[in-house]
Image (cartoon, rainbow, N blue to C red; front, side, top):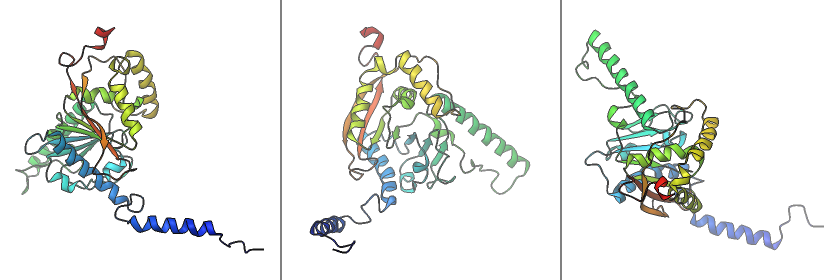
Length: 289
């Protein structure tokens, strides 16, 4: 009787095949062996997206990273900050993981579902913080009292303005929790870049954006609001209420392999779109009925 651990021929064949694969996959290139390679994809994709879209916003564009969470907070954005004027990480889970201080001196964070209302609230809070800081420095003048700066982690007002580009990494934007955020991104009427893990997610997002009558109907929003409120009960602002006209979509590109990411990685595909006013695009949904 052969020993328990005796290998048959097919065991050696499998081992040889694995060794051949391993010889071509280095720790530098393998997303599983080297998680840092995945994190490097984020700033590379952001900068390449700005260049491909051509909307660099001048010398110092602002970018909003939508749906940001712990992964985005652990990215080293230092190199990106040399080119962009500001990066704002926005998401209901942005503070749940990762360091309080994000690497990159142009990065701030807002914990909220992405919306114009959330950004306005953050702007009010930032202005109030800056005002109180001015008062403290006036009461206790020091060498820096003439050049006050916002403390680390507090959003800078310029970052809360409409971005030159919004980007969502590894996004399931086609699902219900993103529904109102999707409408807000269309309302920006500025480029939106999305990365996904699989191409079926690209196709799913295209389907819902190309069918605004159903995507943003009162029934669809009500259903999605219930799901979103269950997932993020403490989110700000709370979802709900009717939406005014949502711009239609114009595709900048409809889904390609992301050349700045590995295949089978969380950001393997990318697509981009922009919202255009209904008067400039196709007819409003209620005019098609």
